[in-house]
Image (tube, rainbow, N blue to C red; front, side, top):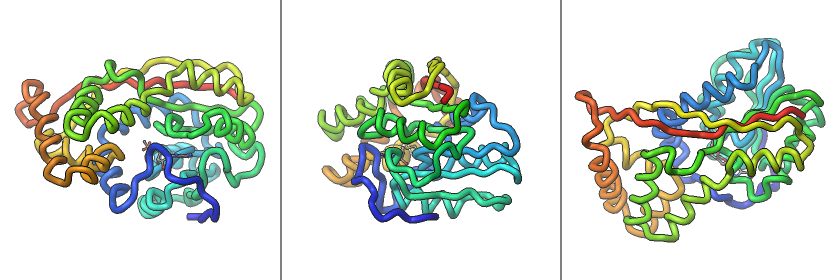
Length: 277
Ligand SMILES: C[S@@+](CC[C@H](N)C(=O)[O-])C[C@H]1O[C@@H](n2cnc3c(N)ncnc32)[C@H](O)[C@@H]1O
């Protein structure tokens, strides 16, 4: 991992104190099908040089590395060094290594026009200045290079996330509820307009609804909350017991949807936005 001296402060999604491990463990089941769709949409070729922007623990970078092969290169950038430590520990033993760098999206250390493809999985909604971040992304993307991002579509298209929001509002209070909603504000229209301002063209956005099978919620719901900044706010304000109660509330909400093995399959909707540099 390449450290960077001057990182931006915590953004709307800054996990510390062991939460990155829980993020990897509990968020993977929800993200996995969307990461596959994101990487597919970018049409990666062997030999491509790829950036996973706001890479977190590296879900997209790991899949991209398998696609571009030994003649390609994959970099990941994220300002959260704890997330990157995990990304580095989890990277597959491939040649060449995925290179993770601590950097916010609006201050990337990479050369101009380095990347054939930039992927951004559920990160753009957390950039404090979206146009500045995408202008910097445009700088590091070669002319004709591709950009692809997922961001959550409005809550009412993802029943589990809507219930998670309602549970957090009830158990942690309206401020946490409002904070959570900000993660849903980066619509396809907002992202496409920012991409055009930043120097990309042919920006298009489409909704992607995928069924996700969640592990039995009695154990999973609280763990998943504990891997998110809003669940961390709940614990900070009201303690671990409040987190367990919130998890129970969520599990009960979907009890009638549980399969005999306890799993629950629900639709989640993200917006997939693509553009050309
Ligand atoms: C919901 S996580 C998504 C992580 C990863 N892309 C994934 O698919 O799991 C949001 C990520 O955005 C990162 N982030 C927050 N502010 C950022 C910024 N200004 N520039 C780049 N990344 C940022 C966070 O550190 C976090 O890893």
